[in-house]
Every structure is written in structure tokens, then in C-alpha cells.
Length: 285
Image (cartoon, rainbow, N blue to C red; front, side, top):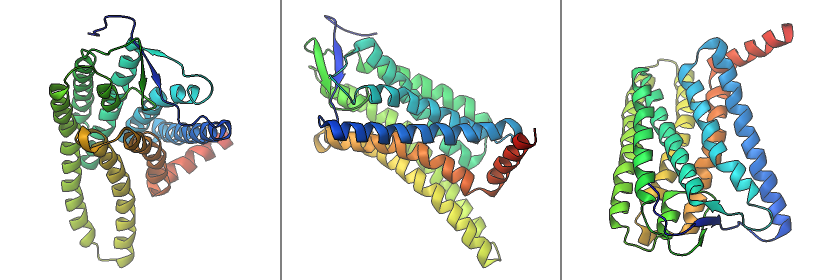
């Protein structure tokens, strides 16, 4: 699959060379990562006893999703640039795309609560990610060592390093992005139309207020996730910059996986109650 005339390897561009800022960024990203692990692990723990099936899958995907990126990113904050071989970069891209695609599909599936869609969504994410990763790494890369202006092996920054035409690859990226981003987002929008109609039929003003408050939190995360992904993958390369891509990727790598446990636990009375019962059970035993 990988086309290389020599032992091509990549290095990631550092965020900063100022030691004080390196320490601050390391601690900040580590804190975010630990909060993501703890929050999503808590949801999985609740699911083991209370069977919130889709939440457990979303949490598991987001733990894996961030773990593909964050440990390697943390290791590259300090010291000299550490090379990653071509195959390692391809592996990271494949798992990042697969888990990211599964995350987008899961958000749409949760809006409809359809178990039968889950296996198909994961299979589709695997298939699309494998095809896209294989296609990207058929591109030739000139030189022994290439610097990726990013903190992970993502499609747009890798495409920028190719020393060949990428029109076909860019077109395939658009098609895959539409399938993974646009279609699930439209399905979520349709579900929210029905949800809004149901909320408006609630007679209690307080009940309507609480329902709208919960839905607005969910919708905020959906807009962050799909919006930033769309800006990273669906914009023409001529109108995008590598620095902007890094900023958008930080949002859906750190912010949305961090917000999801908060919204689906603290803003959900059933899950919150299940957490309290599980904690009480652990104290009693």
C-alpha cells in the first residue's frame, strides 16, 4: 500500500520552542486527556450496571480516539523533533479516521436510538478509513524527512507534503467527508425537528425549558464536532491554512470528547442518578 522510494519518515512541527510554554501546554493537554479518560470511563462504568448502550460505545470510541493522538502529541512537546516512520504515520491516520468516523456516525445513531445501525456504522467507518488512508499513502513524498505542520498524521497536512498532483485524492476526501459528516449531520437535524415538535407539545413551561436546555447542550457539541470537522476536511485547500487546521483539530480532539461526558451525565438525570447509585453501591460494599 505504501509507496516509498527510500526510508521516508515524518516529524511533527512543534507548538512552541519556549520551555515555559512547553511545560504549560504539556500540563494543559495532559489535564484534558485525563479528564476525557475519567469522564468517559465513568460512563462505561455506569453502563456496565445500568445498560446505557450507546453512551458506552460513544465513550469507548472517544477514549480510543483521543489515545491515538494525545500520547504521541505529548511526547513531541519537549525536546528535539521525534521522527515517525511512514507506516506509523499511516497507522495513526487509519485509526484516527476510523474512530473519528465512528464517533460522527454514533452521534447520529444516538439521535434515532437504532441498535441495528451500529454495526453498519462501524463497518462503514472502517471501510472508508482504510480506502482513504491507502489512497493517501500511494502519493510520493520527496525527501527523506518531511515536517508535518500538525500534531498528528491527518489527511490535509499529509497531502500538502506530496510532490505530485492531489486532485483525485482531494475529490475522494470530499466524497468521504460528505458521507461521514454531512449525511449524519442532516439526519441529526431531522431528528431535532421532531424533538422540537415534541417539546412544544409539553404543557408545562418548566418542562419545556428543561427539555430545550438539555437539547441545546447536545446541539452545541454536535455543531462543534461536525462544524470543526467540516472546516478541516471540506474546505478547499486554497482557502485553508495549516495553522487553522491544527486549531480545528484541537477542538474535535479535545473539547468535544471532554464535553460529551459532562453533557450526557450532568445534564441527564437518569445517567446522573445511575452514577450516584453506582457510587453508593461501591461505598456500601
